Length: 433
Ligand code: NIG
Ligand code: FE
Image (cartoon, rainbow, N blue to C red; front, side, top):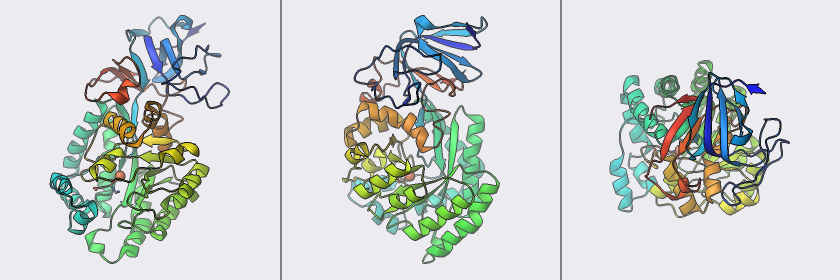
């Protein structure tokens, strides 16, 4: 048998991050502990184990068309380029499923204030916080926002990231919200990066609407959202549902408007207190609920039932000196998929390193190395609704692949700052690092 391929990666150890066996059942074999199950590939379709040692992988037209033990490698079109990985490890490209990458300005002063014990909420009340970034973002031109976002996205790619979610929410007026989303879309056209955009018009109440939150929400639903949908600028809709953000009733209005336009929803929920946002998100079959330090068992049950992903944001937990940890044990018990993301933004998480978040999720929240790796690959893909296309190395998926110079996948969670990337491919094409 000869298969069509334009690139063949050989001499590789492959952490597939795939959750499915050929018969569609969930494979429990962990990548970290019992490492290799020597299972054969069935009909070249998918594999039973999640790790393949001494493996090979064939790419054709940007997609994975075969992977398995190198001894089983079928013959591939003679024109295919063969690349040796010299025994190093392949993983899927990492996915950062929660960022606020497009913004102007800098809030280093707030970082220093928090170090002196002033809280995030107090800083916001004094006119800092989200509103201060809104002012700077409104003043910036589209070109300036693009240049800033481009350099941040490039820094992420260099750390092994091949897909990023980007939220709006620092415009809070129609023109600037549209500009932020256009900048996010433009990045995808110029960088080797998949970008999923999220409209977060309901991020904070802009000053000009002080005391008129319901009017602002009506504007978000009746004016902003239809225009954004008409220009296809958003892949999902998010709300900051919190005592210092928007109420459950206001959140539901935005969710209803999103559903009406056929857009999936997600939620910044239970970050500073528990207001029941997760139950509401579950009723709207949200893709994810994010932060969730104050999520309780009823909320966990609800999101388990709706298949909603729990997104853990250890960078914000760390930078806000939070002490309440997300309910990881309950999430395990109810089998809720956990993702891990940077929440990169100028205030609560000025941290653009997804590898650092894996380390923090393990050290601060007690995730196993396996869970941390799942959190930035397959579960992050689920949080964005793109797990059919990316997030694991499987036949039929896009060839977004990183080759790491490490002894074992757990090293990605344990060590930080060595930048052990050897090579990277985006949709089968080499990424210049
Ligand atoms: O995810 N929770 C609300 N939004 C951001 C913070 C944004 C900011 O402080 O600028 C977050 O933590
Ligand atoms: Fe956020």
